[in-house]
Image (tube, rainbow, N blue to C red; front, side, top):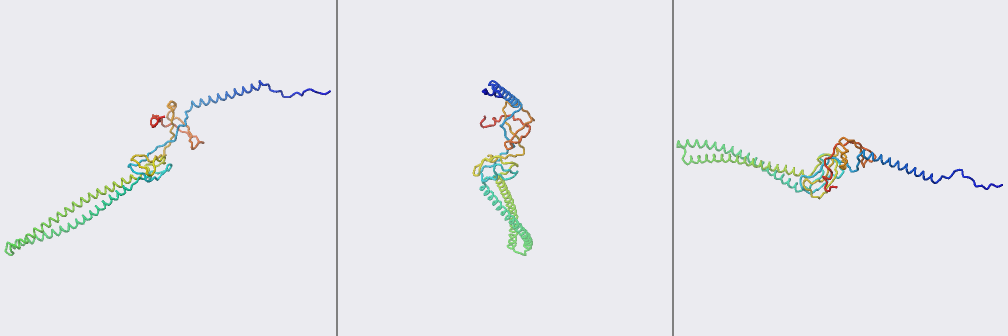
Amino acid sequence: MADTSTPVNDQATTPPHKTEKKKIIFLVFFLLIAIIAAIIWWVNYNKYISTDDANLDSYRIDVAPMITGQLSRLYVSEGDSVKKGDPLFDLEKEAMVARRQEAEAQYRQLLAQLQVAQASLAEAGNNQKIAEIAEAQSKINFDRAKIQYEGGAITLEAYQNIEESYKSAKLQQKIAANRIQSVHAQIEATKMSAEAALANVETANTDLSYYQVTAPASGIIGKRWSLPGDIINAGQTVLTLNQGKEIWVAVYLEETKFSHIFLGQQVKFTLDAYDKLTFFGKIFYIGDNSASEFALVPP
């Protein structure tokens, strides 16, 4: 007799209500994990203060000329390292160079005049010696002529001629002495003029030094604000120099978070340039003013 019955499946089909139950359990489990994760995040969020509004900072020096002029040359660019005393930029100085050359020429001219006056002084001294000798000889002749005239050895006319020669010799000696005094005064005046001219040269050299600005400290050029050809006013910033010796992280927080921070508090931070590294530090300064107080356009 043939068997016509249908074969029975060994694995029973899962009922639909059991599948729905598994989905609900999975959903509940997922929600529990999400709630736990949210609680952990909330605890950590309240435990730490974090922000992306921060940047590296250091002491900055605004480099500016002491005089007004046209920027003629830049020796550095942004990012260049400089040492104290290195030249940073020049101002146009042709007019100042011409002024210094004029002052130097005047000083050299006065030095030449001083040499001529000193030579004249030597000549006047020699002339005075000659005049003194002539006066002494004339006095001897006059004294002898006076005795001869009183003794009747010479005539009155001869005596008067010798007397006039003596008077003339005394006058020449006086003129020679006055000449020496005059040359002395001329030398002193020329010396004073030469000293004034030398002061003008030194002043011109000092003024000329203002036309090249050097680095006031060692550091890195952080920003260039002008280009050659620009007219720069005295005190106008041309370059900003970051000293780089002391670097810190400047962090800007909402005022509502200030009650949770204090000096010496430990912090950790990352830098965009070293995104795989974590740095540790501590708070060493808390500002008394908000950033918006010094901003041209407060947020």
